[in-house]
Amino acid sequence: MANGLRVAIITGGGSGIGRAGALALANDGWSVTVAGRRADALEETVKRAAGAGGRVLPVVTDVGDPDSVKRLFSETIQKFGRLDMVFNNAGMGTPAMPLEDLTVEQWKTVVDVNLTGAFLCTQEAFRQFKAQDPQGGRIINNGSISAHVPRPFSAPYTSTKHAITGLTRSTSLDGRPYNIACGQIDIGNAVTEMTDRMAAGVPQADGSIAAEPRMDVEHVAEALLQMANLPLESNVQFMTIMATNMPFIGRG
Image 1 (tube, rainbow, N blue to C red):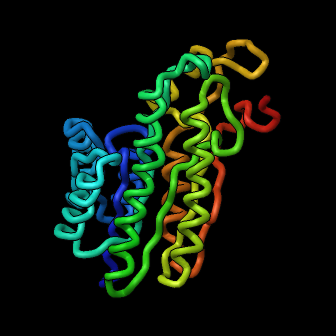
Image 2: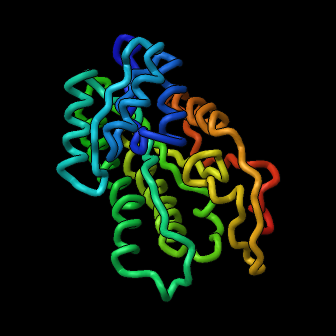
Image 3: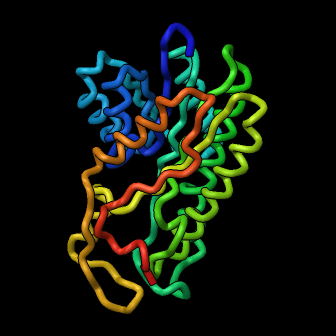
């Protein structure tokens, strides 16, 4: 890392895990670009990071759009001069519903954000990591525990998260000659807007509806920071962090 400068891009940086991760990195001395669709949400992240010395850059981005992703990376390099880490965090799901009731449009929207978005950001990261001096960098993918086992009525989300595991492995292999590390953090039930419904109750594999425990999103941010701060000679290939009592082990 040139002159001690550490630069990260975090997608989905306007809320939840992305915002918590951005604040953790900024408070640790990283310069961070936060990407997302909503300018107001990104500006709120910047506002909360004000104590970090103004090292957070908001860039409105549609991760499913190649031109938008190129602009994200270009603005980051223009501002900070290099790149050390990308957290592919942007993600979404569909309302819980029987598989046969899903529309093709719903399927494609989830794939575009969760999978194509991660691929496009990984592609741009590779180009930058290979070109810069010193060469290399790190990519961390948000995989979710749904990369291991599904929830009922979650085919699009679960499918993309399984695919993210394949992308993580391929990225690790293809990046090896260029000092590019890639790992995956599989998260279960952090307190975010996306998991608010779990407090009221969500479908279980036995057909029941049950509330599920959640954990403070700050614990996820701490885990992300640990992965990000490793030297490139070391890599956390896969990490699972979850609410201790949530139904994951034995689910289904």
